[in-house]
Amino acid sequence: MTDERDRPLEPDDERVQEPSASEAIGAALGQAARRAGIDPSEQASTGHVVWRSMGGFRGVLESVLPGLVFIVVFTVTIDPGTGDGDLWLSLTLSVAVAGAFTLVRLITRQPVTAAVGGLVAAVVAAGFALLTGDASNNFVPGFITNAVYGTALLVSALTGWSLIGLAAGFLMGEGTAWRSDRRKRRVYFWLALAWAALFAARLIVQLPLYFAGDVTALGTLKLVMGLPLFAPMLAVTWLAVRALYPRPVE
Image (cartoon, rainbow, N blue to C red; front, side, top):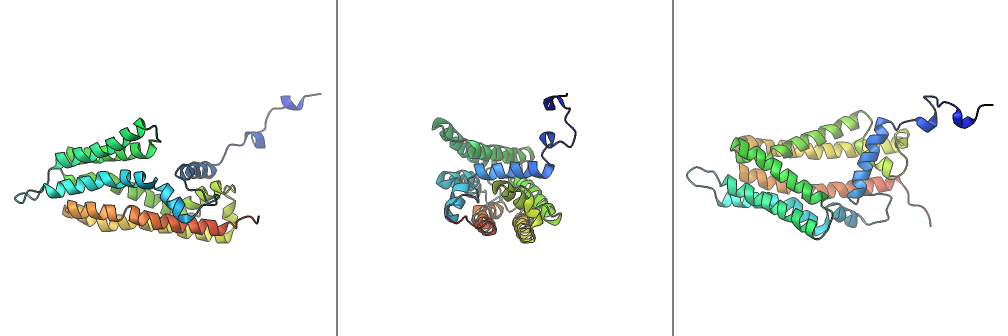
C-alpha cells in the first residue's frame, strides 16, 4: 500500500498552487501600505493614519525641504540679465539637505527608507538637470513617476482590478474576494480613478510650465500639489475603505 506522503503532487493540488499575479500584486501593495502606517483593519483615527503615513513632522520635512531649498536658492540667485539662477548651488544644497536627513536617521538608528528615497530622488533629479544644463529638467523624474502611477491606476480601474482594491483586499484578509461584491468593486473603481486623476492633474498643470521654462512657478506648484493634495486624498480613501468593512461588535 502506497503511503499518502509518497504520492506525487498533481499540478492542481492545493498544496502546490502558486499565488496568482493579482494576489501577489495585492500582497506587495498591502505590505507597502502597512509599512507606511496605512492599515484599514486598525482602529485608528483618520488624522492619525494620514499623519503617520506622511512620516510625521520629520517625514514632511524630508519630503518638502529639499525641493523648497532648490526653488528658493534658484529664485534668489536669478541673474536679471540672463534670467537664470545658480543651478549648481541650488542642486548642491537640495541634495545636501536630503543627505543630511538620511545621515541623521542613520546616526539615530531610525528607519531610513523614506529618507533614502528622498535622497535618491534628489540625486536623480539633479542628474537630469546637470546633464542638460537646464534647471527645469530637475522635475522630469517627477513627471515620469506621475505618468506611470496615473496610468497604472487608470488601467487597473478600467480592467476591474483596481490597485486600491488589491491592496485593501490583502489588508482586510479577503484577497480578491471583493471583486464578487458589486458595492466594493464600484468604490474601488472610483477610488482608483480619483488617484489617477490626481496624478493626471499634476501633469496637466505642471507640464506647460516646464515647456515654458518657468522653474520658480513649476517648483512652487509641485510643492502645492504634493502633500497638500496627497493628504486629503489619502483620508478619503481610508474612510471609504473603512466604510466597506463594518467594525466587529464588541
